[in-house]
Length: 454
Image 1 (cartoon, rainbow, N blue to C red):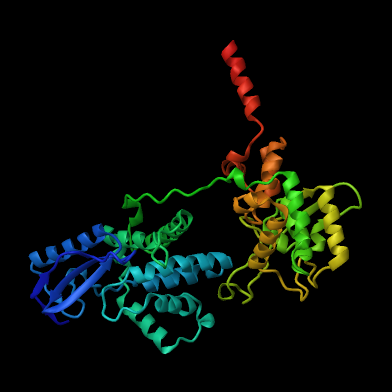
Image 2 (tube, one colour):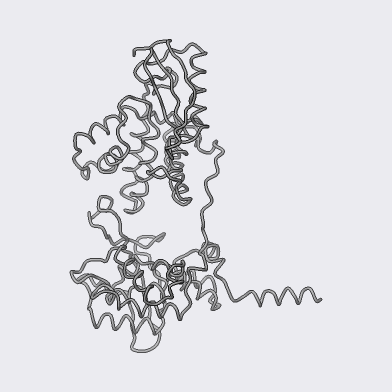
């Protein structure tokens, strides 16, 4: 390593034209200019302070990287963060759902580039992310061949990645937290996104504790409050029964094939509170559909959509166990006569797929979430007033499920029964739907008045 003591520091500069990485630390090492950009002035000041402290202590600076010996990635027998991140993803692969795999990788696409030393030749961020997504964070038999530019980017990441042990330092962990707090475009990330990525980082470090890299999870030592996420259903999204019927009646009017084929699926989301991916995998054998009276659905599988590279089958839709349920565990849902009639009509008109699925394209495929969304938005335009269309009322097909659960609760169905039918725990049910329990305020106020009059 070529080192020198010839180091000079400049002041922190700000580029007002940049939304991110707007604060720049500049210094020279052996008269060679060096710079590093940060999103906040506090991070830039901390980094410059570390450089100056190293110089005051008489440390030599590496001419190539511009960093003092104490800030270089040390020779370590332990894994780099990139290596450990790869083992983390692959270790969870077999037992994880496709969406979980994708969520894990999405968090690591933020963390891996941030937890890297200032090695010369840092590649374009988009190119590096694609190399990680298409190659490094996949099992060996799924990895795409990299182009020369992507291969160079991945080689840089392998060389620059900080040792996993470096995450024991508060400064490094704050770099990680800063990275997950912004989108790839540099804008402030949504609260739920930040919380999910932070949870993945925490779980990764828990595994590092298991492997004796740390004695305790270093993330627990950092005083950092994640942004508050909305965890309750907004009652403004919930339709009443009359509005729900108008929306469902409008669905078949959308398009020549999609709308008519999707009405019964949306009806399952509303009348049985199925998640859209649960309705997508509903099969004839799951249904009891008498000619009169109530029927029943015994739900066993769901058919979520994910990117092909993350699924076991290599297809975008893949049948799997119900959310938060054991393999082959079922959920029994009584369904009202109106839904029984809709399903019977759908089956008489369109039949079923070869595997018994009720909802399919003309070629036996599954409709994508974008197809669901398009049909739903067009139906909203037909069924709702212009002001309602612009509002959040039933903005997504999933809001039909919220409407169903809210209706059941307000009708006086015991929370335990509602939770059983909807596939929730009781505590989650009451917390998520707390603001949708309308119609009880007068009753509660009457009780308070009675107490005050005593």
